[in-house]
Image (cartoon, rainbow, N blue to C red; front, top):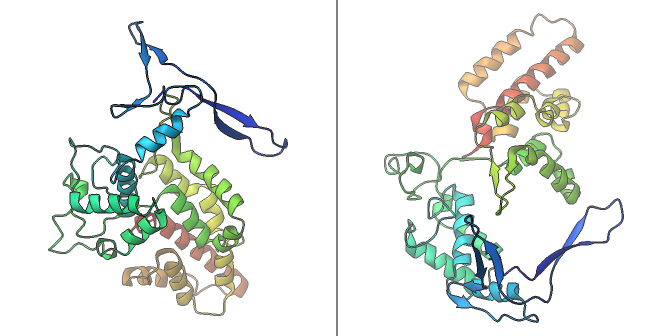
Amino acid sequence: MNSFFKQAVVTQVDQPQEAAPSYLLQDRPTAGPTYYETRFGVMHAAFPKYNGQEVIDDEKTSRREQLADLLTAGEDPLIAQAFVNRTWSMLFGYGFTQPVDDLGPHNPATHPELFSTLSRSFVACDYDIKRLYRWICLSEPYRLSSQMIAENREDNPSHGTPPAFSRMYFKSLSPEQLYDSLQAVAGELDERNQQWPQHVTERDQWVSQFVSSYENDENDEEDHFDGTISQALVLMNGNLVDQTIHTEKNVLLKDLVNKSISDQKKFERICLTVLSRKPRPQEVALFRQIQASLRDVKSPVVRQELLASRLSDLLWAYLNSSEFIVNH
């Protein structure tokens, strides 16, 4: 791989001072092998060769273009399998192989015929990503419920068994999904979508707190967002959550507090907004206790302020529930 990118050089494009830096990847006229030193101090030469096939090695021919042709050659190339496997894993929580980036005869797919059909069809439609998503999302497995029943109780890949995809598995929201969900609860997502570049920039800045980069040869990154302490702290007292539960900063919450409907309806609206369901009996009973604590308040203004504070607390509790951060 190093030899294939021997010709490549990264140059910075001239931009206005206030603009973000932009870079360009270009090829320079270079030929010959790439030399590298082993840990024992022995020099070796590496030639551009992929899967046993060498490429034209001269100054005028782009090695990267030849590599791209080799990677996408055939009816079912590895790059198509990798893309299909990762897409399936993102939508279902598990791929056809575990781990998702380990493909090969040593690690057979759980559903080889389906996997091969999807990969070949993906290549045949010229790597049409939207069509791949459409195929998967219209499939029968994707429409299945996540509820465990007698017929699918044994299908539990979290216990180490291969996934059978007989039901939809629970998936933790990704950092990007959680950010957008909080924006939706705050009533700002529609407005943010109209300013998409700014929204993506602010979202990336928020997500960066959950990502650790390793300065190694492969520029590996680790996403520590799956139930970690940092995630819990951000949800409990992070600035974004604090703004979301603030009556004056949350458009939906502010309108709800001032709306001429019963307290019970206001509570139901919060539950519907955050969890897309109505409150359960035990939740209704808890809210009635909260209502009872407000009966002795004589001043309507003070009562409204106390109710707004209680609704904000309930919103915070729902946002910190496992039901909110898990995709069912």
